[in-house]
Length: 268
Image (cartoon, rainbow, N blue to C red; front, top):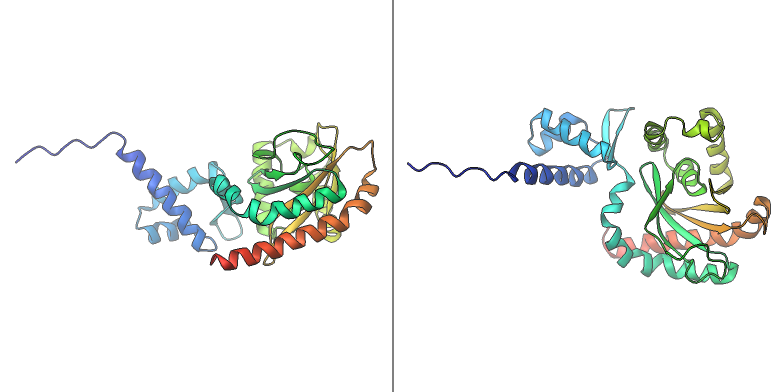
């Protein structure tokens, strides 16, 4: 009888990667699963499922909901398909509306989605705005807690997701709120006001410009955030709200409606 061929040294890594992807696909089909449920669904030993879930959590792709102890996907999963999305919903659905608005209000717009403790800027109209502040269109991230886009996303997320995202951001920087001279209770009240107003307008931390942001809702859920950047020397936050609220909220509603129809056409 021949000696069994030695296992390739990378076989364990390949198997772990496959199992990690299996977990992401599984969670995408369920509204949260516990460690035991994940192990049962994928026929894995519970310790293996726990280790894989914790790894995905540390990487920011999932979070553990303390309310029911289930793991759920974060919007950082969307970053895995960033290039694909750029070829699909951004140019076909969102960008034409963004460019149309930019030509009317002149100031540059950005569209961002959540990526755990940050917001990922997917595209912008800085390339067509006469008041462009940078040359790159997108592909960079901004903090979640202290940006207008991040606060809008939190304000329009459901309670459990909002709390999980805040906890994740604070776990990465426990002094984040203190650095902004605010406390959790005050921060939460601010989010309530954002939800009531339907927008956020604040000075961008460590930058010389401000941002006004509104939610893009798709089928009743927050999908992305539409923002406009402007210099505080040109207008106050109140003037910005008076100037930008109507066109951005109308544009966000149009993008959301178009995205819903686009998803339906593609069967998802």
